[in-house]
Image 1 (cartoon, helix red, strand yellow):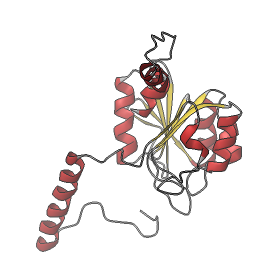
Image 2 (tube, one colour; image 1 turned 180 degrees about the vertical axis):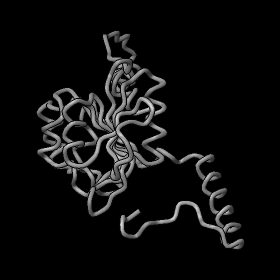
Image 3 (cartoon, one colour; image 1 turned 180 degrees about the horizontal axis):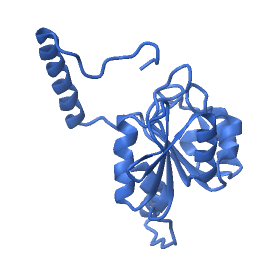
Image 4 (cartoon, one colour; image 1 turned 60 degrees about the vertical axis):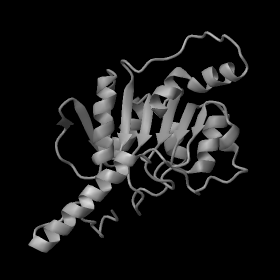
Length: 212
């Protein structure tokens, strides 16, 4: 949703509606654009399928090497892979967990490395992106905009400049706040209780060495 809203500049439409203005303008589209996903777990893989349905080219950074591609998804690894993703993506979406390895991984050098006019979307956890550096690259126009559902401090402080920045969409970390999400969580819990009672392996076991 955030990728599409930023591409089409949906906030401009909403502002025009509030002002009762018929504001036609030329906007972007997703077809042919490159989406870079940082974190290729369940959320990243689900996002990749949705992006392909919008005819986007998709590349993803993941923690552990497992081949060069996943279907038509280009897989990247390590610091070299992150640099390549930042160099070539039109949209960068953060879906990684926050761990000792990912905290602060998108700081000033990485944000400056992104192509001018790129959009940044954060939907997993705050703390992965340096928000002071993000403010800089948004204020000077290096990035075209940002969609932020996860923040370094939550709730986002009332005085944060991000609230009022043009081409920035702030949402209160509720990208998955649906009744169906709760039902899926309950189903996993009940399944795990049955597995535990039967002495079978559990789903979604936390790897403490990885931090998630």
